[in-house]
Length: 145
Image 1: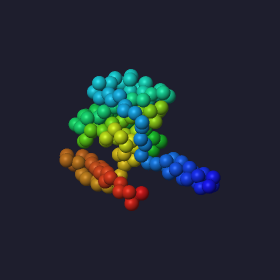
Image 2: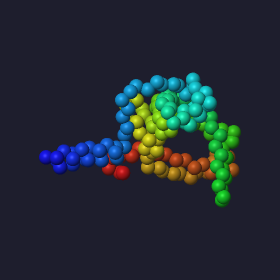
Image 3: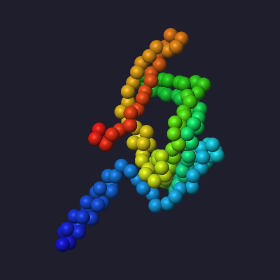
Image 4: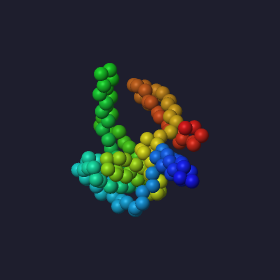
């Protein structure tokens, strides 16, 4: 009997330990990305005891400057790369760990939430002065993992 209970407990621990989705027992305080300062975001990212949930409303546009430096290549999108939320989602930072959700119930790591099977297309730019690299991510299906 003790062995059976021990095996059941181990099985439960193993299955929850490898779960892809995280559930929190609370309702987070939600702050719109439009209402938070850069300093507050930095504080949430660096704090070991933070619990902040940012709302990215559908249509929210975030201008970003993208710079990449490497020994072989470098890249710059200047003046801005435009990042747009196509549907409302939430970014939760808890103790330096980041999760994303679209329903405030199921939380996943950002790579899993936004990930998928990429398709790449290389096209010539409109003014024929370079190339356009277009990437589309098709959502994962459970049987593809």
